[in-house]
Length: 168
Image 1 (tube, helix red, strand yellow):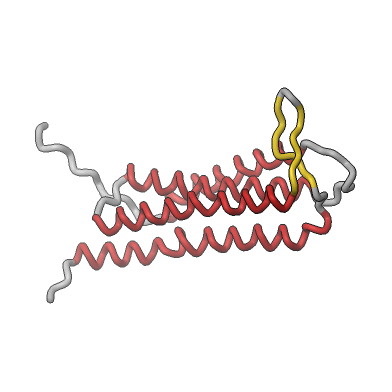
Image 2 (cartoon, rainbow, N blue to C red):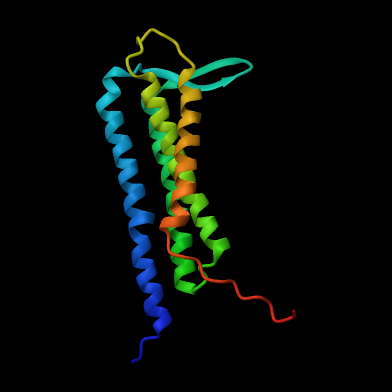
């Protein structure tokens, strides 16, 4: 049985991408959850979940954080599944790499919402009502999404050159 050099190259590239697409997102999520669990006694039981023209909507902190943490898993999974398929099929071109980077960055952005919300509500009086957590959550999203979108293209394996159609 002969091993195609392209296949072993794809396996090497795929192995190099595993820490970036599975380990790093899992560690980021675990750190965010642990931070929340440590700081949860200092966070009010109700925090802002929505700010709009009709005012501020509040919900249970535990529920909001659970939804945010669960929502961060989906883009990470989609990014990993797509990358795995692209590597397996040998279609790791700039477009495919950009799609993976966008999904993974979205996952980090959602974790940024959690971190912004957590850090903006620490030490608030439980009877105090503040809508700042929504704005800080959006700032957290923007910061982590931007950091991931700027970092992941350089860290992920280099994309191949897309073949041009033969009609030209």
